[in-house]
Image 1 (cartoon, one colour):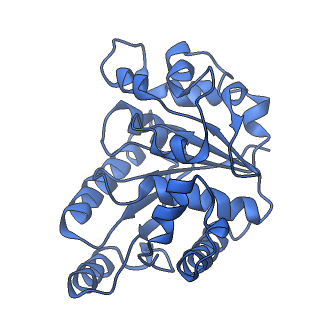
Image 2 (cartoon, helix red, strand yellow):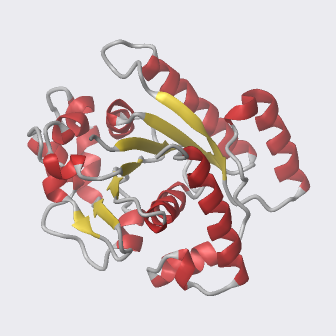
Length: 257
């Protein structure tokens, strides 16, 4: 049985997209899922959180090779039990500019016919804060997509552009007409007047597409990333708050699995 593949993105950086991808992967692993994370962001922040060092083969090698079934072979265990990763490095940015045949289809090709890939329950794709080839690779290969934003003006503008890109991919039969917008994840909510205003605007625009619960702002996420540990190892009330919110979120999103 093929895994559920969910892409995670926003055109705007700094919204905690990579942190949310890693934290959701850990929450799913705690529920007993076998999780694979694909780091499609050349910045490699998620890879730096989940690995001590890069393996010989990275996402750049996978995409550049353009070979069916190669993706699962590149997956390596992360520092988080139950979570595997195909990591990114800076070379991945070359995919955006090099002359390649069908560059937007390479991730889907790499997953095709891979028994190692199909052995996972859930695959999460951490996409770059851009709307280029790498993001298209993620959206074309995914079953669903989660848009991550903070409740601030510029991230919300990036969210709007990202959702428009999702809709374009859905609307073209040669891309991914079966792609589902799973919802919009609001991250780092601090209850300020600005955040409350932007949240109201988001609810008005997207309604029940806003995922629950809203993820609160806590320094524990920064602590977990810095120490290369999952939230459950941080040992603070803030970490417990975040873990509880993320457990509720993944239980709702992946409720039938």
